[in-house]
Image 1 (cartoon, rainbow, N blue to C red):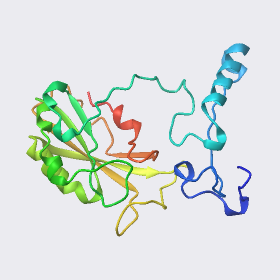
Image 2: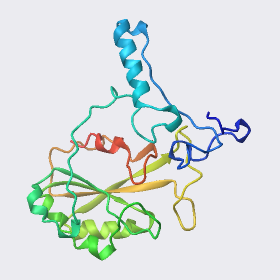
Image 3: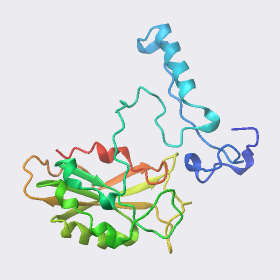
Image 4: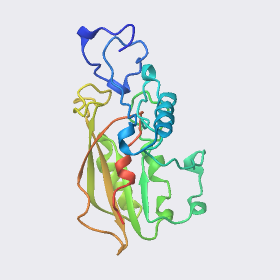
Length: 230
């Protein structure tokens, strides 16, 4: 609750995805996970941990999808290539067992990044990244069949798909969104393609449905990256 918060209005529909959190009059939620002395830590460790939380999180400008404690997630060095992907020689990247791709689909909405037409995406030589393995392709509502066509064209057999049910910060199904021409989109699909015969793949291990909260635009659930695919 902030100075302008009006308790009578109740919860903000957008919660931690609200773009006007610093001025919004609705109620927002923050999650802090302080330590206490009864977990075996000494007093100094508890104080340092809790001070670190206060430094990382500003309740008035709550996280917007970032982790709530620096101890919850191992920080890895950022690695990326900043370029026009249509001109990238994929051969320089080597080979991979599992690939997760989130194409810049054109969805006829204002986005904070550039998008590609379907033909431009289809011409990408994604087949050069794998001789054998899995390809997980995020698709929008309109591009499910196009995504299947892409995977087939790159030499993959589409074997299944994962459906991400989007929830808000209170683990409730999203009812106020910004996508969809006819219905409010509260889910996304992840097509799973397979190439070759990867014997290292454990079958029947992972669920087809994934229920996870939304965060920044285009940021996908962390659970996808830690699925037990091999």
